[in-house]
Image (cartoon, rainbow, N blue to C red; front, top):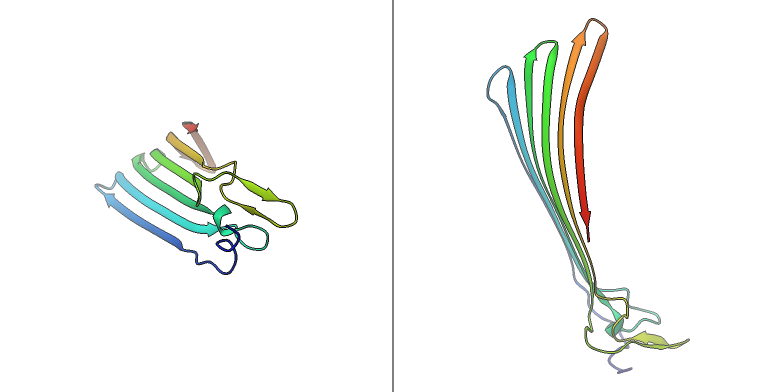
Length: 154
């Protein structure tokens, strides 16, 4: 076990991001927009070195996606409505490179095998709906609306 956990170790990392956006003006009074963006990040063999053996390393996987839809309507030059809906799922996973072995900690020598606090997973879902109306008159501007934000984290 000690030979297997000494020396240099390879690690891999990946970072991928993307964005798609579509905007359309259907009339002088209406415009709609759609946006989707995604982030996927993965890392392996993090946290090893010095007194932490390769078998104590961990793998991380992070996924974050967002879908957004908005609609802008002009009732008149003095009254505008904006509607927005959004959904955002988020997943963060941390797992051990040795999922089955027992944890072994030798003070002053090293830490080996599975981390006792892993695996750990965080799942979050975020929903948002907003509707705002703006009125303009002379030097004055009024804005009224509602915003509902729901977050579920497990």
